[in-house]
Amino acid sequence: MVYGLLCIAIIVIIALSIKIFLMRKAAVEIAEAFADRLKTDTNTLIDISSRDKKMCALADSINRELKILRREHHRYTQGDKELKSAVTNISHDLRTPLTAICGYLDMMKSMELPEKICNYLDIIADRAELMKQLTEELFGYSVILSSDGNSEKEELCVNRVLEDSIMGYYAALTEKGITPNVQITEREIVRTLNRAELSRVFSNLLNNAIKYSDGDLHITLSDEGIVTFSNTAKALSSVEVERLFDRFYTVEAARNSTGLGLSIAKTLVERSGGSITAEYSENRLMINVALLEVRCKK
Figure: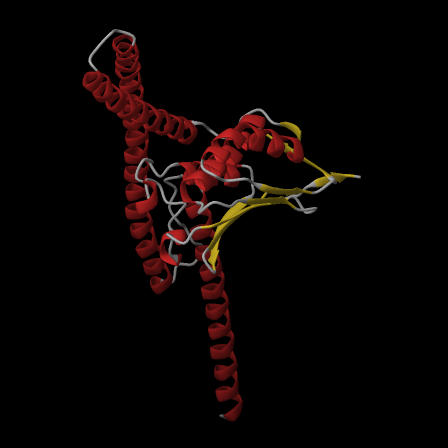
């Protein structure tokens, strides 16, 4: 009698162990398949080897949610493509008439007109030129987003590119009363990047300094290849700084802007594998650009 009960207990334990093993195996299969479906754009559903009703029901439930998630993802992707295409087309269509308007205004200003009319023309020309600049910025942003990011790269000396960018903006900085304090490491920082994209990043950061700086600008390039732009900006708040890299976000101090400059810089830096962050402490704005792993030449 006792022997019979012991045999039954052993059989039950073995059966439960097998069931637990199969359920754990099914759980692992579901987890691995779920992770794979999230990474790949495929309509393949999750399939498990177990015939357990509960595990099959779990797999079916996840498959239903995956179908909904995939449908929403496709809808978002398509909408994003259509938006980028619309922005590109609109900004492109605006460039031609704006260029023509600026040209006709230049012709009118060359004519002998009453002083009052000339003043009005100057105001119109300033506004038209501003619209032209904003349209160019919008068009450039849409082009960057539409590209696949596989731009031609070469070994660059970050030191030289940064120096060239600063020199290119030196007149604009001094016009705003800003004399940049530049500290660049003597060590040559070599990186494999696209020259135009790196120059665009530095240009946008310098433009940002012109908009927000209260009269000072410190630019440093460390031995580790980290570029820092720092300036006093009392008009900013910590909340505004957190949103500086958001698309189309502008603060009160920069009304004449699309808010795309820093967003473009962030896109280009992250596309190259680097990172860009902003800090705000004691009325100072600091933007740090950490590029990919550097290779230094002594």
